[in-house]
Image 1 (tube, helix red, strand yellow):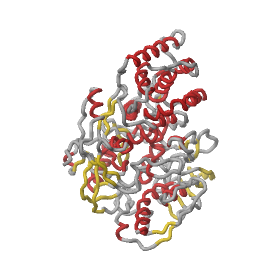
Image 2 (cartoon, rainbow, N blue to C red):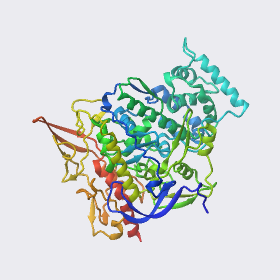
Image 3 (cartoon, rainbow, N blue to C red):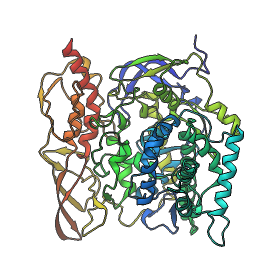
Image 4 (spheres, one colour):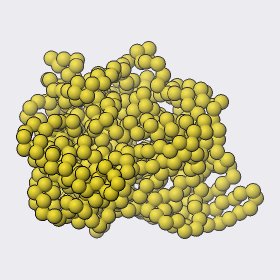
Amino acid sequence: MVEPEDAIFEEREELMLSPTGGNPTLRIAHFLKPSVVSIDELPSPFLSAEPTISELENLPMKVQFKCWQRPNVKRKMWVGNLHSKYQSTWKKAGIYEAIMCSKFSIFRHQDLVLGLAEKWCPKTNTFIFPWGEATVTLEDMMALGGYSVLGDSVLSPLVTREMEEIHEILLDALKKTATSGSIIASQHSWLEHFMGNGSKYEHEAFLSYWLSKFVFPMPHYRIEKRNFPLAIHLARGTRIALAPAVLSNVYTDLGLLKEKLFASTKLDYKEVLISAPFQLVQLWAWERFTTFRPTPISITQGEPRLARWHRVKLLGIENVRLAIDSAGENFLWRPYAIALNHNWLFPKFYGDKEQWVSVDAALDKGLESYTRCLRACELVGVQSIQQYLPHRVAMQFGIDQDLPGYVARYSMDLSIAWSHYNRSYGDAKLYIPPRLFEADVTMRYFEWWRQSVSDQKDAIKNFVTRPQNSGIPQVYSGKMENYNVFVLPSSSVECHKVDIKDYVKKTNLLGTLSENKLAIDVKPLTVSLSQSISHSTANDGAPKKDSMIIPEAKVTQRQQSEGSTGEAGKSVADTAVRELGRSAKVAVHVKHNDRENSNHCTTEMPALELEARISRLERVVAELKAARAK
């Protein structure tokens, strides 16, 4: 019998429905613990009545992102010089992919990052959107950063005399490479001193540089001696759990940025310094917000997933807040479960069928990593401890969502908090949903969330200062470096027209979508399948006009030379997502103050709502194929 403290999941029959609403279905559902079955068991409301920042684009403060640096030629060269000799050591230590990620450049979309920070709730370490709760998780640290969730603590001490001697050598080099008149060594002088000098300890020096530059960056771009013990461990192939430490820093700085954004409404003009790798926050958003992200590029064999966003052009969004608030129906809860191409392999925890696995010493490392992502714990960083609450965002793991139970803080002591993160699983069982499964929420969660958002709006309406142009984000005209164009998706897509009358009365926009469509031969809908489809509803609970109810279908597979999976048996729905992810031509007709301007532009869009809706249909297509195979 599984002890309560060991159990990760619970299974029970519940009335379930889509987080956007629709017809509830009674079925067996799986939930992450702890969950509660009564609103009375929940703590006080988590939504705080804080005023909204009026203009994210013109804040009276300066934000510096110290970790957001573009790799230069010499840094890439240093990685290349050491790659063949030490790649096996990097893989053993769980940092190979993370080091490779540091070779790519991600253009910063500061307004998007600030818009996300505005939604941050430090009490739960989650984003609170009008349409749901989400956050950056340990899974994102693995998928986007290449960091390991398994291994020793980042605070592990040196344990041998040899390691202590190397530590002394690095400290001595720190003094020698310090710039004139300074007691600290710059990252540039450190690189110039060690790169290719034939030193016996070049590997440790490189890892110290990498940690100080990309993982735990410090002010003034200096080499941090605190990273030396960690670099020495990694150089010997010791696996270190960098993922929880990096995520702890991300949570800390999101809380700091949220605090400063709130203070800016009180005319606080101070500068805020962000040291956590916030490019991961932006990439988290790009992976999920399909309607206003840039078009990713194809990756080659062996490249990390982050490479698909290398130097892609940004989308200009006039009103980030409106774009985020209206993106609920298009939000991809499980972006890593959708096939890209044959050059990116699914981890083992993205299977085509559901399964229960015993969590024991014989558990595969990949599945053990996934288990770590699902368990509430304390995240130990180099200077912080943050609470990790995956049960609040279960749908990001393909798990159904119920009312999230309260989790008390375990300890603020670093060693005790680490032992809590690294605790054993006991006799726990791991539930792995099919990768194409779309999770739902319970009826009580749906009602609770809707009421919570309503209460939040009532509480802050007296504080809100609306921007002068609070309507639909408009298309930028003229030349913009590193930018493409974003037009807010419609709430209705019919006959290739985009209807935005619900968003702004003074703007008329007509969209002509590309002719790429999913070829479907329609057959009568079966009852069993209809019960598994999530239906979109309007705010009043009535079905929307554009709700897509897909009957039992025969899907015609259109093979493409570019972006093809190249693997037999790959999901047809994955091909459909790529097919629909091509560019769209949009003709824009704008009227302001009885004066008309017509502009035509070509923009790379991920097929607006269609890509997200197709992801909701993947499960149905998979079930159809399985049924026909029988």
